[in-house]
Length: 114
Length: 114
Image (cartoon, rainbow over all chains, first blue to last red; front, side, top):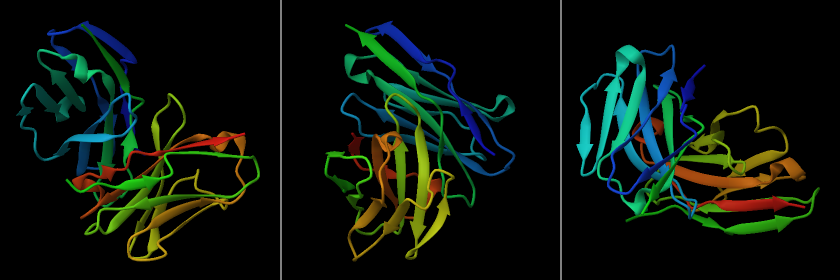
């Protein structure tokens, strides 16, 4: 069975600060895929990134960066120079190879204070 | 950018009534999914659908639930006899090549059972 843990329920930071959202996962599969989704106040789920288990290279996309460490089963998400528009609930998710289901974490509610 | 369309955005129904939630996936996608999110909680997998049949389903997806692709564009979720605990946001998603490549989610249907 798969499990995704997002231990930070809520985080508040002042605008322009950097913030890291933690994600720890459990799976017995050797091939799997990790995702981050953003859920803004309007409620939709917005895809941010996908990473497969063989690719431990960190990724940067503008102010967003992701740190995948297989040794600690973590896939953390950092927002640099946060903005008010980053306020949302962020979900980490896992899908093993050959499985169509995404297992989501419980989400982290991020509030950026102007 | 192509999107997954869900209708209605909000539906209120009386306990025991049947509801049908509708989704139009992205046109060239072959994999379809339903998820639900009880208010403030995590996103939970209900069912995946590929090649005109269910490929996976969760324990939540019992005999009260069914899915259908009645034509080439729609994908529906039916709840036969709604219960109060079915109140949730229901998300439809689609993927071109399967879960490992990530999904595109619709904006959701908020179902309220009274």
